[in-house]
Image 1: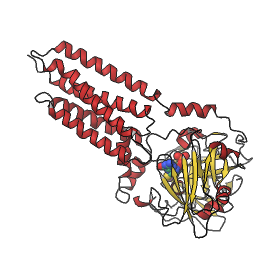
Image 2 (image 1 turned 135 degrees about the vertical axis):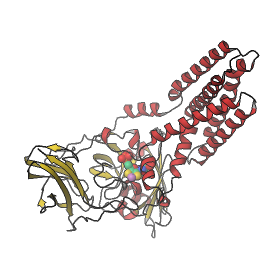
Image 3 (image 1 turned 90 degrees about the vertical axis):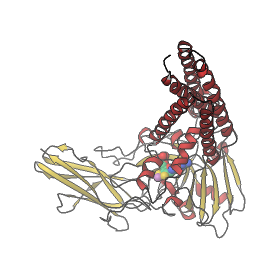
Image 4 (image 1 turned 60 degrees about the vertical axis):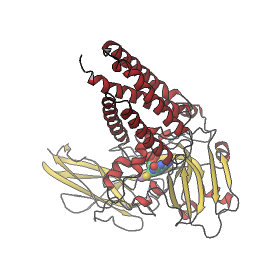
Length: 496
Ligand SMILES: Nc1nc2c(c(=O)[nH]1)N[C@H]1C(S)=C(S)[C@@H](COP(=O)(O)O)O[C@H]1N2
Ligand SMILES: [Mo]
């Protein structure tokens, strides 16, 4: 008799995969945002220590989430295979293993804020599927003599069933697709399409208006919350005279404002691309706060999103003259789900991690010491005003450009303060003043360009900006944590 070892391993993987599929289906059907695997991945993201692994936070916490989920799935597949093999001699090790995995999943979904009992039900559904499916696919293997053919057939059938469940899962419940449909159907009045101000876009490098599709995305969630605008509520409470609860219709009924605002991330490295500029439409936060009546002594607002993310914003940034918005539209269209649909906050002059709450559902007026947002315990500063910065987009590092007259170009920004001047220096030579594009006000980035003469060979260029307060951008290189990188951006290139 051939020892069907691989079949036991395959049985573990097929049963395990089927359990993941049914738990995912159950999570979707029960309107749970974070299925167990997602919850485990998000738990990992939340527990990467700040000071210890800044770059890991930046990568895991900010960008490479599909990689993280992929790693978890690969680890799970290996564990499933081992559990299957262990089932060859005794029935209980795989069952115990599945129980332990379910406990981990149950713990992770329990640690999710804003997630109800549906998430735990999804874990139990997965566990029952694991044990049941493992029993079904290994039954022929346990028989004397081992029924090879029947075993392979059962493996195939259960695997196919698992795949079908996984394919159907996203259609269950009011998941992302349903909300995407609601978003498409939404007709927002008083939202005008973006018209780039004359002279703002110099047409040399990145567009002045960042299209929603190429706008950077930074958040801690793996599966963005699917918030139905009909069910959305915004609570404004805490140190106010009159707490408010607004529906989406209530919000849209308020006086509306539209503005160009550049948003950037505190973890953007020098020369990095975690920055974008868009035309936002919404309601001024200050008018809603005035309606609620902010009490004496308050100096902060703790914002909370539908997925339990938080940030603390200084009250002054929300109540002074700037366009701090509860935005419903980006570049003339309803917010994309990934950028906060149906409503997000945008505060010019502050990094996103202390201000730009996506899927916002709660504004608690409070004091700065109590408004401790998500990133603060992980080593980021409580206050996050945008630092003066500039970037060279043309040429890119490593580019080969024609020798002779060449136009360098890029952007500079310090929202709320504004840019007065940008200078470039080629090969460490004198600073040359650049031409600036126009800007509607101080809330956006500014494009710059400068014509330089290049001999063939290697070159470098550096850029620095001067703000409207007369400060020159510092050359001192600091890291992104705790409150934003500084230093001049430099590119190395060749002319021929
Ligand atoms: N709900 C939620 N809002 C959030 C975040 C998040 O993780 N969750 N990240 C913040 C950070 S760090 C930044 S820089 C901006 C990025 O907004 P974007 O993804 O629309 O570019 O969103 C902010 N709002
Ligand atoms: Mo950020």
